[in-house]
Image (tube, rainbow, N blue to C red; front, side, top):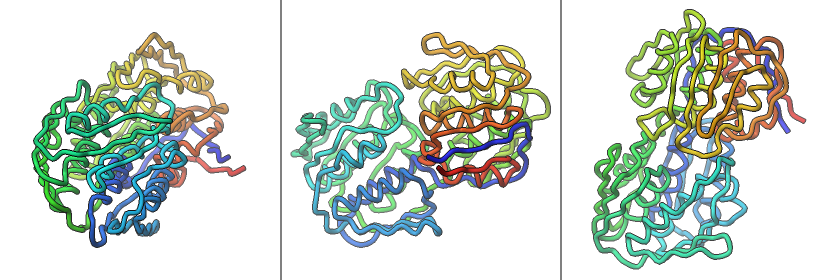
Length: 420
């Protein structure tokens, strides 16, 4: 099992390019199942464990898939699908795999998809997906750990989400894009990755409007055509680099990212005393003195992203004063706080809020990553700590970050991977 060895206490400095967005690439790869002839080409795909799982999943349906990891390009020929079953062995490895439900339904009229797995972050029910599909006229039931669905109607429909759901919005988008009729999604997720999915679908001939707002409309079309699409930069990876710069007292520029996808993150770094400079496709963060405490609340986009909550907490542990960090998206996402305490952080958890009393220095020790983003937060805390730290279970981190130790090494981190 791999681990990272980190000699902390060194400011990060330099320029680094962010990877393609995992949270855009996964649903877009699932959407290639909607194209019934020709080869679809997806570029700027990060070489991640989760991407490899999605490739295997597409192949299990009968799609022909080639992944050139060096070029970051995936080609998919889904013209001859042979199965509508998404097996437990694959879907259990990541919750994002559940997004194949919509494409299978639209393309084949039925789907059998295992209930999802992935990171343990408390309850993340698929009820929104199921209720949304039923609003479209689908027959949906659960049996023996699988969701079984059949889509029998092409009439106009309105899907209303009680709460914004990223993958729920995408599954309804996919289920509605083929056939006839019009589907309206109310209280749709506004994440940039949902916009990326809509742009991919439209490039293939779909008629999707309103992506990026709370109301999305889909005019169904008879078929989609093969196309080429490049995955935009990953705002979460970029945010990780920028927060790491702040926590270590560094000066880092991240390229290949849209600053407006990180507005709230940059706002908080500014409140903590960093100099923030935004350009068209890059962002620079420079920490000129010890960070200041701040208040932050995770919230659906354009709020502060829950996937950077652990990273921000790491920076708060060395800030001057008392910070408060509230988690409103997932009910069990403070597991990393106990590991940060091992590094010397002063963190108190009260219900959905973490109270962080900044210390002047953290001290290196051995910690364990519990999920992708918690692992990234522990890496940042270890980079800010004195002496040496070891971060175990980095296979979690590998699901969301391509060779994180190599990328951070490019901007001055003393970090290495050990395999055992």
